[in-house]
Image 1 (tube, rainbow, N blue to C red):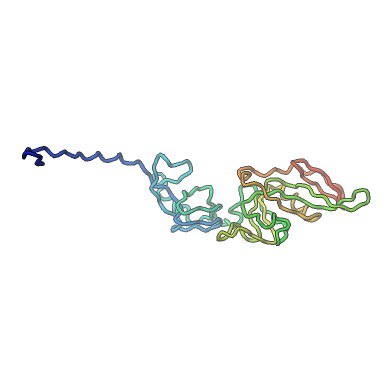
Image 2: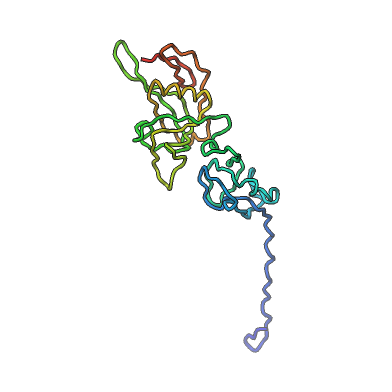
Length: 247
């Protein structure tokens, strides 16, 4: 009760408690307990269950309600891509098996890893600014004889090819913006691998950096190789095979 002027009593206002908010429907989603660089051999401590709104659980996320023992199944896998701390774990970014090697774990099914020689100072790799997981075009520079005058020509061998490693670096290290090395390892299909191996023997190969927007596209497939001349090779340019004589 409250006293107001004249001694009149007035009823104190009654404050009603708000009803509790509705309980959020959640599930536990498997996430990375720490940052996991590409090629990490993951152990049990690298995983964590994180409370997640059930309505926001996307396709491919691993839920405790459905897979309570998934950590046991996934430990010992190799990460095919990097994970940030707290990022949901996805099966397709992990590979497990007795022969899951460092680079082979990063290769998509049916592809091959081929190393080509590059200039360690960056002359043939966009000044050294090409990093693993970038997309590149592969160019070949060769000699040609034009009316008795020696000259050089450059042609595009392959387009939109994924870089697996520069030297023995398979990822950007500690924020280092430039990775250098004397070779680059590329992800190609079997015919593209044949094209690169032959091209290295008769010319100099260079890498041209592409936009990061091209990362969602696959590399240009190499067509069936045409029969090369006795002293030449086949150049694949814009998806068309062309026989070029070696000078």
